[in-house]
Amino acid sequence: MRNLIKISELTKYYDNVCAVDNISFEIKKGEIVGLLGPNGAGKTTTLRILTCYLEPTSGNVTFDNLNIYDHSLEIKRLVGYLPESAPIYPDMLVYDYLKFVANIRGIESKNQDNRIKELADLCEINEVMHKSVFELSKGYKQRVGLAHAMMSDPEILVLDEPTSGLDPNQIIDIRNIIKEIGKKKTVIFSTHILSEAEATCDRIVIINKGKIVADGSTEEIKEKKGGDYLINISLMNGRFDDIKRTLNNIPEIKEVVLKNNKDKIIDFSISCKAKDDVRPEIYRRIKETDCILLEFHTESRTLETIFRELTREN
Image (tube, rainbow, N blue to C red; front, top):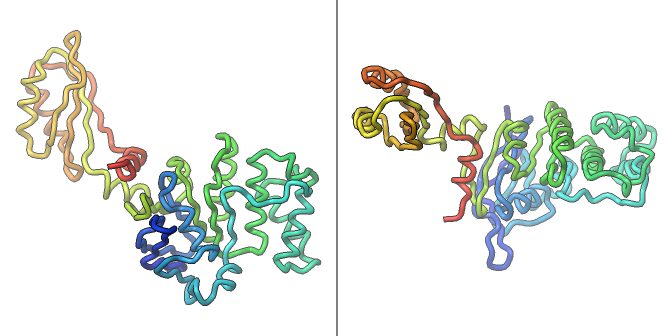
């Protein structure tokens, strides 16, 4: 799979404020890539630079052999862009609005109705084509915005917080549309909703304070950044100090922490090194005691936990 977009040492200052701080990464053709980060992390600024709506302070972005400085018009023809608030005229009927967009995009008159019908089917807006934009829910406005961004059949689709402010059902609808578009297009979208990124993206780039702090699939990020894993254990008829002393002799165990000790039941967690599976040895040692094992399960750190650790304030 060839690299389609290359971001090289990209930096953007607003006066003395650094919004994007020397970031570099590449996006392959056909990928669905999520820019993930808290509010103010630099996601929107990065997308505006990618779409040639904003010039960086330094660095470069290339689309194959086209760079954002010398070929901005050609790049804009390759890219469909939907900002966080869809810029659509509220007093127009949906069909009239899409017809207007088709004219602006230079689509031949004889092909416009077929293209609008294709997009209405893809974005599931057939039932509102006769309504004014003003009447639509935010979810439908986002779908109309998607149809707008897709009108010229761009090779790349860039979406800024496409599910912001939507209810759970609308989020699922937009997610499914993005995944359908991603079968044929390269899609880049920003979000701070972890479940969206995990469910939709082939790859996630986590940005915090203008810097990339993680890059990869959700599983790769969990593996690289996940660090330790926990084993939660519940025992009956045992002394925690004795159990802790026994388990601390296992080199792969980093820490044993008591969670509850009540009514002859001891609940505790064991922090273990990520590369080593010490469950058989832990079980063997517990079996050698007079304790009754009530519960034994492993808990991996979630993407949410990793995200919070990577983006929290110092």
